[in-house]
Image 1 (tube, rainbow over the protein chains, first blue to last red):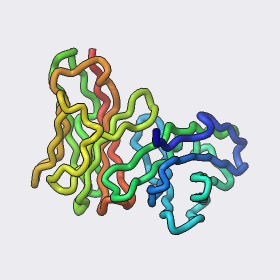
Image 2: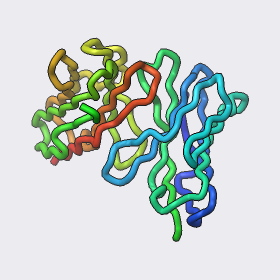
Image 3: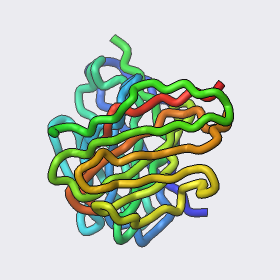
Image 4: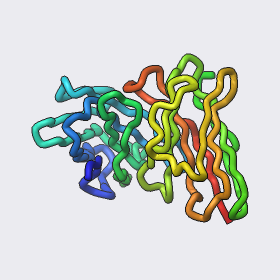
Length: 112
Length: 113
């Protein structure tokens, strides 16, 4: 069935290194994609989004890449910091946008 | 308000009891979404509203779950006759338009015992 999923359930990186979190989606009709960060005991926090008419978008220390050909989304975090430790969810908004479908999440551990 | 406010933060109910959760969206946001998160896993979409109108309720177990967003009142999610498997964190989110950034509340942790 259709789903938004993540390739790896956990990712461990050294402080200062770059992190890459990947996501696959299956619905080619999706036109809006979002990355959320969830810290323990808190609600998801918006990080960055991208629409289907773009293939790259940059924020502060974060970059999202969208490859519509292979239905792949990635989040790159530059110079990863301990405060980046959290679970990261990709999500897709399926044409019309009345619901956003979340993937399973990737836990990022940052080693000092 | 400037943030999505969910109450209560924690709720404990005996199996078969009713549970009611509340959500005040950010002022000016027309869209409200409810999600269920079990064991910190993925979010299950429940229902979305545009103002007081339901737009998508495909995720709602309709026999026991109901939700409302009435003018000048917090939105609510009610579970009749709770079951053990309803134990989860329920998140509410709001957004200005249907497919723009959604802001999430801190969630209500429901524990059914």
